[in-house]
Image (cartoon, rainbow, N blue to C red; front, side, top):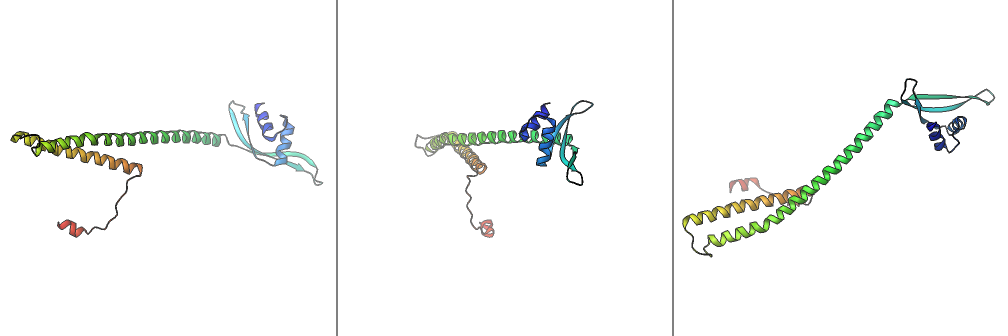
Length: 184
């Protein structure tokens, strides 16, 4: 009975079998109907209804043609569900990627200040501005400076990677003569 109501609502007619049939014939529209199978379960059929007339053009009956499309409908619904889940997964991955990019960018920027400070103090120690150092201390300060430089390069690499992933990286296009560069 629910199916009759659904079809009647579509055609804007009373939920009466004959009224629905006449509306289908009049519009010549193919419709999907749900039927209870004799062994249980609901099956979906795609139906069209047409008038049968005699030689005088008088309607003497109606003929229906249909096809069981239950499997196709179920496959389409499964595909829609899968696509909806896939879309939701893509949105979550994009969100995670954006959070990751923002984190990398923020951490990289925050690391620049202490690296600059460490590098500056190491330079003051190395050039004797803060007093004389013995040989071991000079060696330790040079190691601090060297590792601070390496850390600074890593931070710059992270920033470059972050810019590249976000599409903000600007490349410089220039001609390079590899023969000249290789010989220097």
